[in-house]
Image (tube, rainbow, N blue to C red; front, side):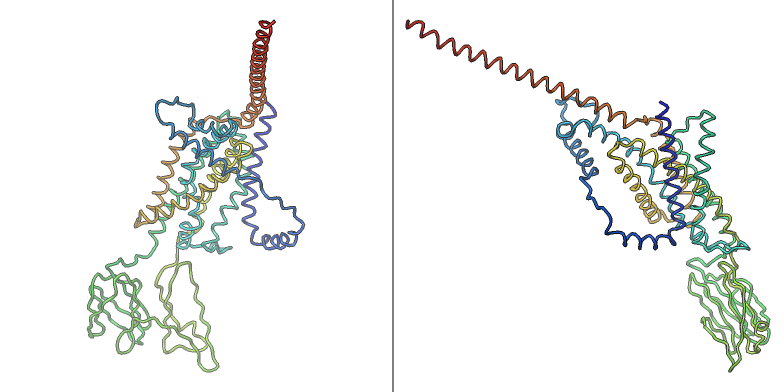
Amino acid sequence: MCSRVQQEKQRSTFFSIFYLSINAGSLLSTVITPILRVVFIVGSGMYNKTAPQGNILVKVCKCIGFAIKNRFRHRSSAYPRRAHWMDWAEEKYDNLLIAQVKMVVKVLFLYIPLPMFWALFDQQGSRWTLQATTMNGDFGFLIIQPDQMQTVNPILILALVPIMDSLIYPLITKCKLNFTPLKRMTVGMFLAALAFIVAALVQIQIDETMPQFPSSTQGQAKFINMLDTQLDVKAGPYNITLPPYTANADYLTFDEPFELVMNSTSQLADIPDGNRTTMVIIQGGHSPTHKQFRIFDGTRECTYTQELGFGSSYTLIIPPTVTFPQCQESIRPVLNIERNSVSMAWQIPQYFLITAGEVVFSVTGLEFAYSQAPSNMKSVLQAGWLLTVAVGNIIVLTIAEVIKLDYQWAEYILFASLLILVCIIFAFMAHFYTYIDPAKIEAEFAKKEPEDKKRESLKMDKKDSVEKSYENRKNSDSSSDEDEPSETKM
């Protein structure tokens, strides 16, 4: 009993170290992998390359296929029912293989809800990164790019895996709580759902600070006065006074073509629906075009510096009175879009929650699959585990295409709600799952096999004895028949 507990503890430690190594590798791979690739190729000639024998996955699939086909063929009530549908494979496959397949199918059934977790988890590299592009990555001492926020996940894993193994799980055990692997996985799924709820709250805060862009039936315009005199502009219902070389503060929204009046000169202006336009007012009218420029004056040059924030947009006004080399004082920046004001640090709580969920869910899931798999089918369940990841990505694509929501925070809530629903279903399934010891079951079959062979041998010996006795009796009767005529003749 002590040895078994020790093995379970070592197995749990192994998968924690295994997952820790994976995420440590994700941080160091960009530096180490190119070197390892060269070493691997150089040593290729010294490897002992043994070809794999057979394919257990194909064997499992054939066994399941035969059981289904045989059950369908004998679906009539005239045939007696069998304890398990896999027992219909007994006509072709041995009992040990059937028992092993039963173990695998039992775990694979639990895998059905799992892709939903990966559907949320893998959005770190897509939707969460896009969310980071609308946030401010300036931490003062460090500037973080949006796609660099993903490194928070492996960094937190390196910290959380040892904490879970050496502190949290032992503490739960001391409290005498039955925190089984399937219960851990349920908690991990709930933490991932909670992470998306936090992401939705952050997204709501971001949306409040984002500029209001025109809808598909509206247009927006900003006016820049490039004249050296003050300019009075009337654009539809708006009245604006622009000093020389300045622009109005915000974009003005128009639902339809409007009358543009500048210094008593009137004309009809029409902005394409869904677009923003900057109207540069010059001598003789206005120009909505976007132009590129270079500033030079013979051998003299001018350097202009403008601090840009994450997500900000500026228009630089260069008046004809610009002087060299003091252009810094002459050029005037016009702010089109404010810099992102919500710090990327607000993403750390959601990264912490989903990473904690990953540690509890994924590490435990790998350990659970390994512990419940037969000795020769552990790779089958590992393949099934990886398949849940692939299906999770398909779910993301499907939901994104089928259900189109106007607000990103609503999509986060949708995914969180779906995972909570799946979490409840998984908890219900886990409640009825009975943990097994594959090694013990296989040992029983190994012990039973010699007895079966011995019993079969006894049957064969008995059969041979009966046949031999029958032959002797037959020979004896034949001999008696031959003796009777000879006696009559005498």
